[in-house]
Image (cartoon, rainbow, N blue to C red; front, side):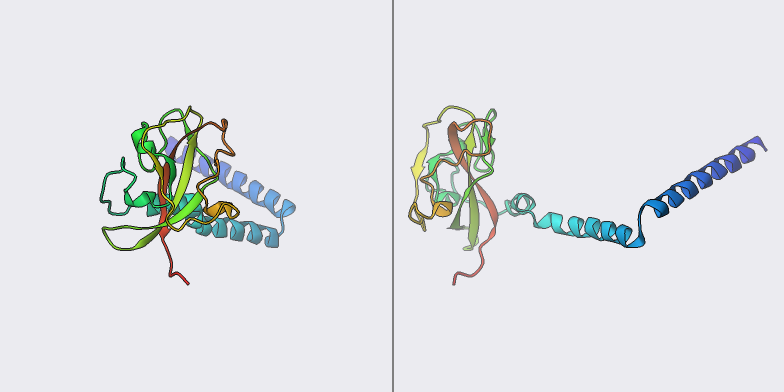
Length: 180
């Protein structure tokens, strides 16, 4: 009997709290405002997978062939710099103690496993002294320096704590669309 009374008391308290909160919400916000916020939240949730970081993490699951410590590795067709895979990192992650620059250049490389072209984001890893092992200078489809977003000849350590260049990684962004 006491358990039922306690349960009913809890329901009454919960009912009062929800009712009070609902009235407070009705006084402070209009229906349009509420619908706008809910719509914004739903739109934001739908757009989240389209962000470049989410796409890069999802797209970097491609079949691989070759040695990531060689300049001839398929991802490195437009890479200029030291390979992070030779400097304590991997082909798509910076070595400990360094951080990837949020500013990148992009290349289009053909994967020999599936014969498809992929967009590769080249991120400089910054914050440590230069790693001079496995230095590459591949210029396939590179543009002149006056078009810096396609050039590997620019230091890309902007937006990081340190502008000291260490090495470069190649992250697959996704399959390249038709060239036209």
